[in-house]
Length: 119
Image (cartoon, rainbow, N blue to C red):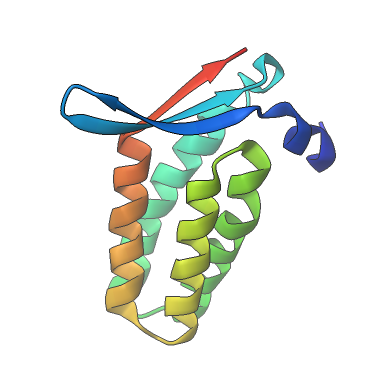
């Protein structure tokens, strides 16, 4: 599936409240149901990698991962991932490791509160 088709296939994003916690709901086209779980799992793995890269101050590598998030998140309907990736990339370019780590924590929280459904 090309990037244009992916962009056209997601339909909506909204934040909903379930009990006392806010959840991020993304509704995607059913044709993406085999791609999205792998993509989100990759973001979780990248969180672990980013923590390791922060420990060794590998800002250039962090920048590359963050840049990829910035570009890919919105393509799949996850604008939050794109926004976090952009902030993380800026922090990495400034060698602000504390800022990078803050964005990693934010990404982990975003992923933990994410609900995806397919229509």
